[in-house]
Every structure is written in C-alpha cells, then in structure tokens.
Length: 320
Image (cartoon, rainbow, N blue to C red):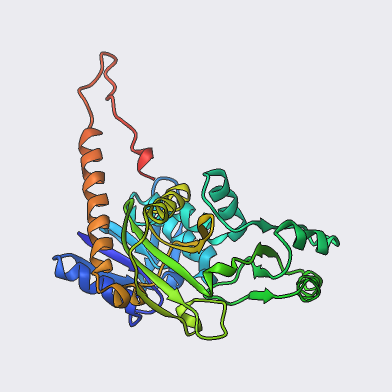
C-alpha cells in the first residue's frame, strides 16, 4: 500500500508512530504538509500539486488535520476523495466533529448522553441561559477552542454572567454547559478505530485544575471502560461518521456523558498510558479500507455490451 499521512510536522509523536507502524507492515509512506498542497480543479481530472509534482498512485490517506487549519485541511482531504483515494477519516466527518455545536446536535439526535448545553445568538437573557443548564457553577466554552483553551469554569451566577457578557460583547460564539461535580476534574478518553474501542485512559487534571487535558498538565492512566462507556463511545463515533476518533466522556451519576469527539486524536498520551500499539490499529484499519476499495472495483468491472451496443458499467460514485 502506498500511504500518505497529512501532517504539518513529521517530527510529532503521532506522525512518527504512524510512519513506523506503516513501514513495519511493509507499506510505502510519505508525510505530506497539507498546507503546502495546491489543488487543481478540472472536470474529470482533479489533482494535487505538492513540492512541484503531481501527487499520484496513493492507495490511502490518513488525515492529521489541526483544528486551526480545518478549512484548508479538509479541502485537501476532499480533493483526495475526488481522486478516488481512500481516506481513513472522511472530510465531512472532520468538519462535523470540529463544529462543537453541530456535533452536539448530531450526538443529541443519536441519543448520546451529554451534559446539558445551551447556545444562543448573543441573547440578553443570560441568567435564564445559566439556569437552563442547572445554574452555577457552569462551564463556558468557545466553539472554536481546542486542547482546553477557551474553556472557563464560572463558580457563581454573577461570575458566569460576567464571562458570558464579555464573550458576547466580543462577538465570540460560546456554549454554556452544566458542571458535573462528581467527575472531580477527570474524564475518560476512549480511542475508537473501525467500530471498536482499541484503548482507553482516564485523564486527571492537576490539583486545582478542572480541565483534564494532557496539554494543560493533566495525567493519563490505563482504565477499563464499563459496558455503558464503551457503548457511548461507539455510538458517538458512529453518529459523526468517524472511523477513527477520540471520544472524551465524563463519569456522572446518570452514566457516561460525552463532552467531545476528536477526529485527529493524539497518540502519545493513549499509547503511553495503555502500552498499546494504537498506531498499528490505525494502519490495519486503513489497509482494510483499501482492500474493500479493490473489491468494489472488481465488482464494478464493465460487463458485456448490451444489445444496444453500449457497455453496461457500474458507477463508483459511492467511493467518494
């Protein structure tokens, strides 16, 4: 298999591990900086120019698209899809997961448990918004925040009102969420690949910190998920159409509550906490996708000419 890994930094742990896992399985790998790709749109022959050459012959792509470059990164993934190259994560699934509001609407519709959440169009009824999610303390999140940035814990109604009004005055889009006190600054990260939880860890925020993100100084350790936690993680990934996902959940009195579903989850924390070869699972899944594509192509081979003398061919539009 000739594999492309879309990553801006080849030296990142996740990128290096994917390269190692692919090469260990005999695959040819190239790391491509998606921001340096030029897209050429033409009827019937979409193409990508990278470092002065046309990218050709790839069997599959593993996107590692950072949140700050979602727009252009997903355009590159979409271009590969138009070129009939299998992608381990669909472009539209990445877009859905990056929009916190849209993803939570999809998860709620699918029946996934989550903290009660409110969103308004800069409404002046701030106190009502706070009360709708159970009152203070509340969590206030920027819709475009990542790695724990843009997340505020407001412990009183007055503090929450001040923070929300400040964000509204800046025309910043936010959501307000109920605070799950019993989680005690910890959450669960379930790593899902191809409809299976392949690893899980419990992340604990440092003392005095309500955010458990490893980037904020939190620690991760191996954990065994309950049946309900596994089911919630799998349902969340399926609802967003993600073949690879990091599902973040809180443990609560009413069961697991999904906070976020990450379409480009980091490998360093989960592999070090669990000791598992998560990168290898991703490569095996990607290899399986390419085999399915070859199988579909064989089934779609042209049949004998019809009586009218025209070939009866099957469209492979479904491969996009």
